[in-house]
Length: 142
Image 1 (cartoon, helix red, strand yellow):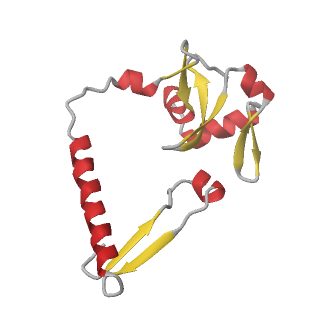
Image 2 (image 1 turned 60 degrees about the horizontal axis):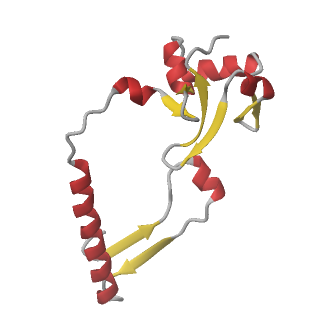
Image 3 (image 1 turned 135 degrees about the vertical axis):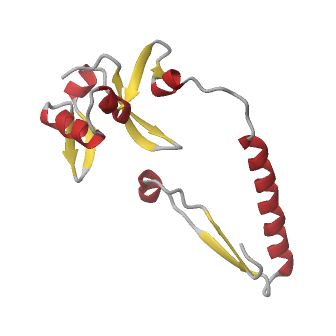
C-alpha cells in the first residue's frame, strides 16, 4: 500500500498452496474509489496494531522441546532437517540416503513415504505454516 495504490492478495508462499489452492489479488486505486481505499488502509492499520501486540512476549521457548515434535501423545519425532542435523548430515544428503535405503521414493521431484519408511516409524504431515514434511523417530538409524 502506498499513497495511490493498494494491492491485497491471498498467496501463501509455499509449494502446497501454489499447487492446491486458488489464489487471487485485488488492486485498489485511491483515485477510483476513495472509500474502499480508506477502508483497506484502516484494516491494514488494525492488522499492524494486532501484530505488534502479538510480537511482544516474554515467554521462554525450550529449544529441546521445539526440536522434537510429539505425535499421538507419546512418541517423540524429529523432522527430516532435525534428524539430518542429529546424524551430522545436510537435509539433502539425508533425503538421498532415505531414498537409497528404501524409506522414501522420489517421483516427479517429490519424496513419498514407502511402506518400509512407515514401518521404521516415518510419518508424512501437511502443516499450514511450513507445508509438507516427514517425521522420524528420535532413535532412527540406517
